[in-house]
Each structure stands twice: as C-alpha cells, then as structure tokens.
Length: 325
Image (cartoon, rainbow, N blue to C red; front, side, top):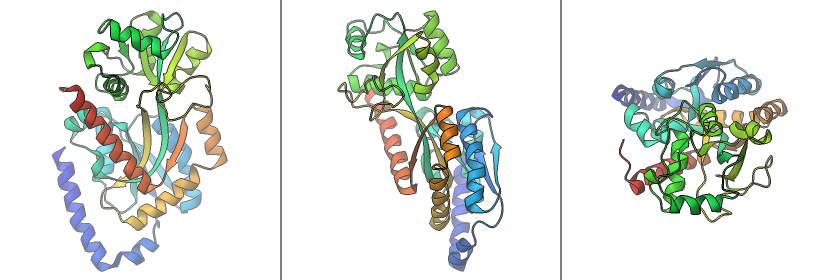
C-alpha cells in the first residue's frame, strides 16, 4: 500500500495550489454536489448499519445526497485505502474503525491513523469479559486470582489473532502484569463464533462487545464479569468496570467519520457540525439503541486526540508484551 502514501503526498501538493487560489470562497460553497460515504465493511454489520441510518439525517442538514458505498476486502484495507486515497475535497469521506490503530494491521496494510482527517467519533462498542453461566468464578477478582495461579491453563477468544478483541485481552494482561501466553488466544471468525466456543466449552472466557453477548446473558447462558468502560453501562448497572476493580484499562471498538488527510479544516468543520446534529436525531438515537450500539460523539479536535491516544496505547501494548507479528 505504499501507493497510498504517494497518493496522499500528491494530493497534499495539489491542495496547496487550491489554497493559493483562495479556498475561502470554495469552502463557502461546500457542499454543492453528492457526498460519498465509504464503509470498509460488508452490508449488515454495525459500521454499515450506522452509516445507512446516518445518511438520510445528514442529507437534511447538508442539502445534498449522501451515498453509502461498501468497499470491502482485505480485512478492511480496501475500504480504508479508498478513503485515504480519495481527493481531499470533502466529497468522499468514510467511516474508519479500530483497525487503523492496531499495529499488526497497520504493518500489513501500510494504512495508519495519520492518513485521515478525523471528523467525528460516532460510536464506541465497549468490550466485556464474559464467562459461561457455570464458570467457577463469581467475580472478576476471582478470575484474576485463578489466572495468576494457573498461567496458560485457560483459553480466551473473541476474534482472529491480532484482531480488536485480542488487543482488548492483551491490554488487560499488560495492566495485570501478565503475558500473552498466560491467557492463550484461540482465533475465531468473530464474536458469534467465539461465544459459541464459550458455551460449548472450547474456551473459558470471551472478550466481545457488551451488546454482542447480551442475548446469552439475558438467557442465563453466560455472565459478565466486568466491562472495559469508564463508567457503568446503563443496561447492566450491576456489572463493575475494570477501573472500579483497580485495573486502569478501557477498550472499545469505534466508528469514526473521517476524510482524507489534507481536507480543508473549514470543510471538516462543516461536516463535523452535520454529524453532531445527526447523532442527536431522535430516529437515529432510537435505531442505535435498538441495535445495542453506543453513540459517543466527539468533535473533530477531540476525535483526533482520541485517535492519537488509542494509537499510543496499542503501541505500548506491543512494546510492553514484546509482541512479534
């Protein structure tokens, strides 16, 4: 994907020319034609559902059509690359996800967070520590104590190796002073497969989004031990956060609206205002609540800081645990 970075440099030089000709008038006319919103993942997933629920609300504010386009493949690389390589004119934007801050994915695809101009953080999907209903641990503290005394005995899953939920596990192990091998990871095709493994006894603990395990928990087939959140989750107020339990670790997959790097700040501001209004739309809020997706809006400056902090945290995990990939 080195061509991605070359394309960014070329567009950066092109943009300098646009600025020299006077960008203020051009930006004031934005938007004047349809906007393409790229989704790097398949139809029906949380990223796609969020984008399609947002599009009609954005259209009302922006006054132009917003066309959702799925660009799938390469574990998200095709779609993220399409966003990064688009002309930085505000007419092709997209939804970027956690992959852009995961070191193994970045190393493989050569697509990193600094190749995008953040617009608005939209959604956080906090991760839970989930066990079977008959697991021997009644609390998270009991699980950790047992894990320390039986390193390597228990198995975990949630997604593929080096995937987002794997990094949720790795971050927890890092904060507990443990190593990757102390809680081995069993690769699966995603949360649904991991939860099936959990219920069937193939693994002992699952790291998945809170909403992904909620049906099993409500059915009495699984239990939450803790949430990787800053504060308690409204739908499950009795479940403690890791921070309450003395573990300084939060983790959530995220959905963030972003444009190609070098997009004019005035254009980003206009889009940020549109997304800020859209996430408050009653119909959108109702849809997201029913889909167990947690709206967590940040403006463009706070979104940039969030992206930088997450990138730093993921790199710290790699260094602290001496991971090789």
